[in-house]
Amino acid sequence: RTRRIDREGGERASFAMALTIYGSPRSRTMRTLWAAAELGLTYEHVPLVWDDPWLKSPQFLALNPAGSIPTIVDDGAALSESMAINLYLAKMYGSAGAHPLYPSEGEAQVWRWSLWAQGHLEPWLQQDGRLAAVRAAAGREIDALVQASLSTLDRALAGRGWLAADHFTIADLNVAGVLSPSRAMTFGLAEHGAVEAWLARCYERPAARATRERFAT
Image 1 (cartoon, rainbow, N blue to C red):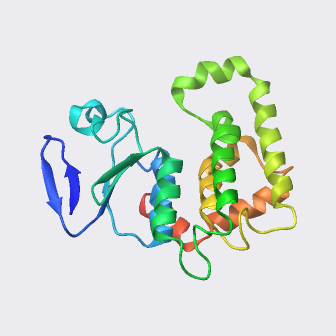
Image 2 (cartoon, rainbow, N blue to C red):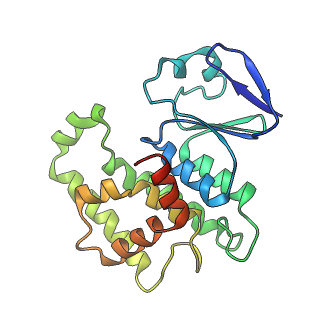
């Protein structure tokens, strides 16, 4: 049974879907929607944008005290923060098979690259309008930080196809979710051939293409 909170503050019981994903695909929610597609999960999508007043309602704050997206409710349990959500979903539903999305032998590398992307790449790639003044003040320093991080990633991918295993994993998805095609176009990958080829492989995956086509991003 799923605990699904609606905008009126009531709860609805649903036995058809165990997973609800809150958040607009034009946000970090996109990487969670992609992960769900890779895992073949059935879910209900509630496309809340980042400034929707309902995010600050008591009902939603009970799910996520930060009042932010993405947030999920899976079989009654709420979780927020896109990297945490993706790692949870992958470990819960993608640990089996010949090419698991969450490889047990590569678990440390999965966490390493997911946290690296969030701490050393995403801060410099954000296009949030609220940070425009910060980016303008930092100027070329941000560009230098981006290029340094891309160089790190390029070295890691030299001579290998994927980050944490010999196949695509949630580590690749999480880092590629940070370095989206639109962000990559902003800074360019001409000097980072390994990253450019790897990013193309990630976004050519059927689940990635289907998710982007479904949500027109």
